[in-house]
Length: 128
Image (tube, rainbow, N blue to C red; front, side, top):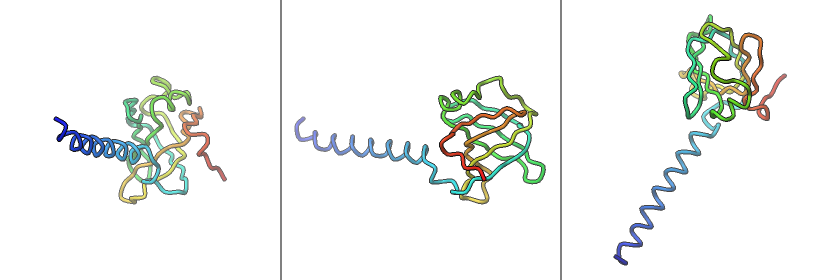
């Protein structure tokens, strides 16, 4: 039993490192551009499911975009909860676009739905 202990510690440490690295990559902003952009369109789909609520937004010129919100707790704290928006509502999202220009994806810091403003990440909002 004692001779297997170092191996178990090594395997446990490796698994822990993978979990921490995956969580950091998922929750970081390194996948997004530094500059913020504004996206206007119409909500086509709403998902409030973890790990991040998301919206599918159709723009007039650029098709469907995936707009990721904060984790469920942050999103709820902003006032954006299930039922406050519906399919077909107009939306303006302020956020950071994916570094991959082939991907129509952004992380929203603020959304405005039918005239109501929801600051998801108020500390990250940069306006001109």
